[in-house]
Length: 131
Image 1 (spheres, rainbow, N blue to C red):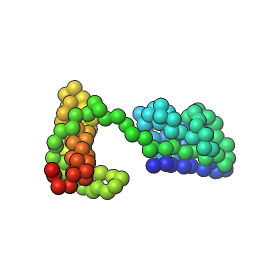
Image 2 (image 1 turned 180 degrees about the vertical axis):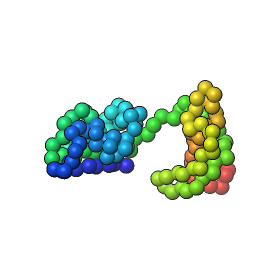
Image 3 (image 1 turned 135 degrees about the vertical axis):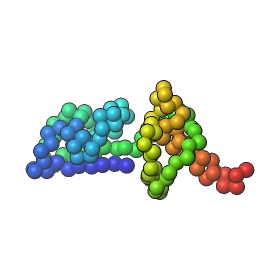
Image 4 (image 1 turned 90 degrees about the vertical axis):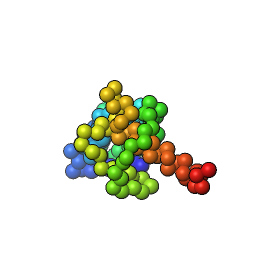
């Protein structure tokens, strides 16, 4: 998935970082991942987030990269799935359930349940007969 922003005369953004944070709502952690994966562009050229903008510039961010989840243990957790399509999975997360694994929630976080869910779907898709 790509997001593109064209700098206009009315734009108040001075740097690529400002566009990414304010226009696209990109978090600090995601910004770090995007930088490490070379996914931030100015006028179709790889750029630094500190780069200054001019009228007519195009800022683009490419979110199409895979994250490593090998440290997340797949756990069969009952998920309350509200909506699902090819791109989105919307889950009603119970109060108090951790989102990411931690020392006190190593196998009981939402991430653990979602990983198990996707691994189960992948297995069923490859072998619909269940054999």
